Length: 362
Ligand SMILES: Cc1ncc(COP(=O)(O)O)c(C=O)c1O
Image 1 (cartoon, rainbow, N blue to C red):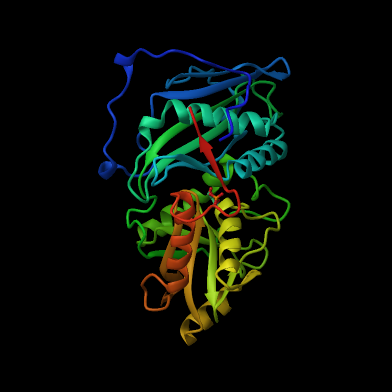
Image 2 (cartoon, rainbow, N blue to C red):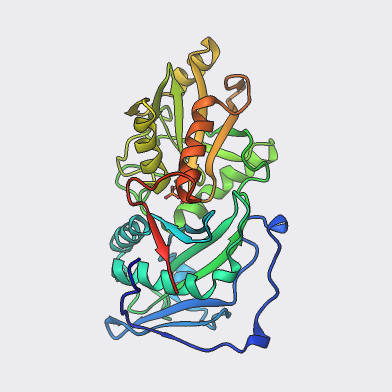
């Protein structure tokens, strides 16, 4: 096992009587509990300062900080898994480091060196390993974030930033767990346009999605399926997941053309699908074709893919006034196979043949 690399990071002591009580695996939902420590690193005077692992705390910031007004903020999401042999594993953290780097560039923020990104997370997770839940489907969710902290009004890139990482022991993203969800196809509002910031993991993309998401929730749908902004015809992705369609045994997913988030899970699932012998096409399907092939029985499965949601079977969709059941409304064969493969590698039940796993050691 590789030893931890030397990086510009100090670890502050916390008194053991300040530690919070742990939460049992059965009580865990997504994103409500936070561990005892966090990582904080400030950018000022044109450089990143020494990173610090500190007690989890609130920030004190000027109300004039640029992030509050103009939304210069990016984030990431990855997980630490407790594997069946007790090892602690991160899943493809280098991909998150690269995406964070690109998001920073797109939002004119100072990038974090990918080595610091990965190594500092390994240190933080090692210190907080007692918080990693063990039950299948649970994990320690890791949220690296960067915000513009300079206190000044005026639309321009900040000269000061805070990078921080918080950890949240988490259960299933959807209350259903690994069970079919229903999604609503949004035909009026759009998430991203060509030339915009759709492929960056920036806070504004999520703020812009809320109106449609609330509308969908009111109708009983857990997520919105976005269509392209130009024709309102081709499917793009779901609120917090990429999406795939099984049509005549071929797995389709939208191509990476700048408007969707290049998902780590999407990339992994495409590889695993090929390994299972499926043909994969990175091609955007039109909503008309999806409706037509669900009705004719050729489209047998739809599933979402994302770190938080893992693989999420979609049992039904609504588009305008049409309400359709996908297949028989239950979890399909391809979806179940891919869930087994992906979680098998993450939890150490299946060989990590692509070196996707980074072990965390003390
Ligand atoms: C909009 C959006 N698309 C797709 C994904 C899936 O990406 P990943 O598999 O890297 O978690 C996410 C989750 O982060 C997301 O927020």
